[in-house]
Length: 100
Image 1 (cartoon, one colour):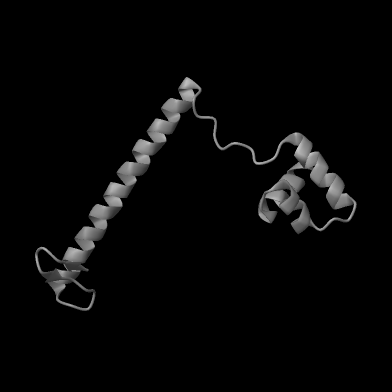
Image 2 (cartoon, one colour):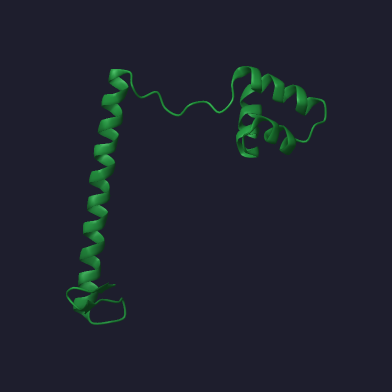
């Protein structure tokens, strides 16, 4: 890691002080990230209480899932079914598996 303003360079192979500084910087970064996640989860919980947060929108409607089953059962390749519906194959597979 190189700090341009201070003119300091820290690498894992340098002095013990440099390794200490890298460890401290990593700990501070990990702490900041955990605080961000905590705030995010609190915000989501409050939004759910207000009824604002409902999660991710569904990619396919029930009618589209029914149509996908019809196409897949009639022999249309699943990659083609996914293209017709405008979703990825993984999304299509999960919807087809949920409905069964």
